[in-house]
Length: 428
Image (cartoon, rainbow, N blue to C red; front, side, top):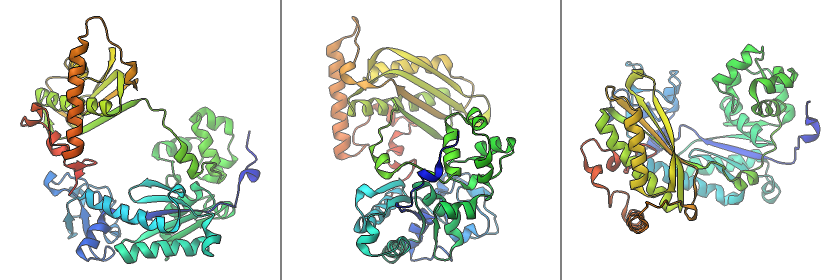
């Protein structure tokens, strides 16, 4: 059954969704005194070769039809451009300074940082306070960001979080002021037949193809379609499609802040810098397990289940994936790494080059739930845990590379280098 959406839509809330245009590239231009709308610049680590991915490109380069996330060899050789090596610490510093600008106008309780370059702001109660319209307040915030940090922002204004996001993604780019606005009526008028559907938040290519098969090509089609068929095709996710087609989004920023994830695992994956042999990849696996163990100890958690996945180079063979329930719940490195090594030797191909390793530790519980068997040397376990706690303390105080296991000094080990990265990219 359709909800009575007319009774659910409320026009008494106003949200801003602010995005920092080509953020990483804009920061690099700001540092160089360049205009990102007039220069060709890409942010990428050229030391990784022509296959290195670009984290961002300037708006001027986008005019050539170049996507933001493209590999260096895919850029037209006739286009001359400057390459800036990623500096993640610098981008985080800029993002923090921009967040400080938001705090001049609103409380942190009314801000949801969606990503390093995008944030939602509930400005409902501030419009009367400042005697400004949402458009005027957005312009003031955007002007502060531009004048102080030389970063151009775009903004979507909406009567719920979804409409603010869509106003940003679809409408702001066609507005000279870089601001788009949507309420329910405007959404119905402007975007009911907008295509492609992938322009809309949370509709990816896979969902779009499934909608195509049903003869659904726009938001109006979704509104007019039999909801029972949609639920049969998409399960509970059909509710989001239907709600958004009717311009309805019940979630508030306070709901996001009060949400606590039910995820009961820690996971980590690593794409290797080059093809690794069976033995060299095992070294990396041991390093990853070491970090996972230290993370669990830091959070006073133990795990009861582990998973391993290994991807081989250039699709030479399907990935090896397996999991295992531990006999005892623990966070001690020697116990966990022993279990991972057993899985590795059992499942991973020795004859194929390895390019990616993914691990997870699941069924996490408070360490008070640690299970020991009759054959466990409790004193040895406590001795090892105390050593690892001391290692964590040293790392927190002096840096991640202040103390490492000997295996991290092997030629093919990666942890020392990765500890200097943020999000897998150069930090400085």
